[in-house]
Amino acid sequence: MNGTVQSVAGRLAVRASVVAAVLLAGGAIGASGAAHAQDRIAKSNDPQTQSAVADYNAGNLGAALNEFREAAERGSRLAQFNYAMMLLNGEGTPANVDEGKKWLRKAADANMSHAQYVYGKMYDDGEFVARDPVEAHRWFLKAAEQGHVQAELALANQFLDGRGTGRDNKQAFVWYKKAAQGGDMTAQYVTGSFYERGGDGVDRNLNVARAYYAAAAAQGDPAARLKYQQLSAQLRDQKEVKPQ
Image (cartoon, rainbow, N blue to C red; front, side, top):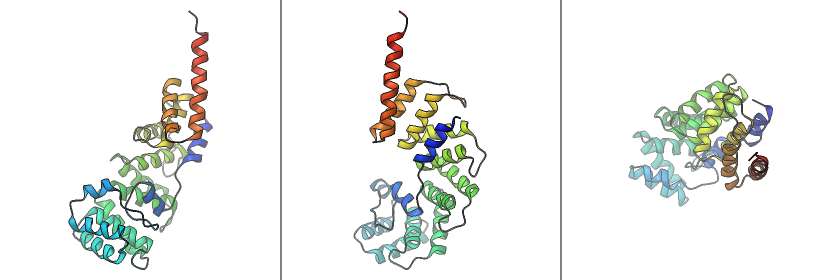
């Protein structure tokens, strides 16, 4: 694939700490005290986990920590994840990285896709652990196969860069397109770039490219807006000069 797409991916790729990754994904606990996403609360049938979330949102961090711990010990994946984040961030308790990593791994092993993504991101960024792109790839793949959009984007970036896996632009496109269809603005822009240029198994299609740029532009990407305008003009000019 042309270097233009690769540079675009590098420019727009999410590169953040574990805490920021949780916040960006709408996850539960971050150092800023972000509220838990309502859809994730609704998916928890554990009253103690719900109570813990309510205490966390109210600023009762000590109570929330204890409630998350008790629910985590009973096997609640959501509580395991939230308890891990509080331990890693030092909320309601002094930071305990080893214990936090242990509970995050439990949630990831229990097949919670967001925990798998955050666990992989730790290794991708070298946050709390030695950087290991291969291990990151393994966890990104687990989460992406469950439809986790940010994991799909992270996996696509790895395939494009050859980080943690062999460079494979065709696989990169597959995962960028999945993330784009899941609504990720970055992936929408990069998918548009693939269709605009063609190659790597992708048929060049300016109309499809324009549609992906439009989707990213609608989410506020100024570069995508410019690309949409350029392709719209190009397609209009082509239509005007088309032989009758």
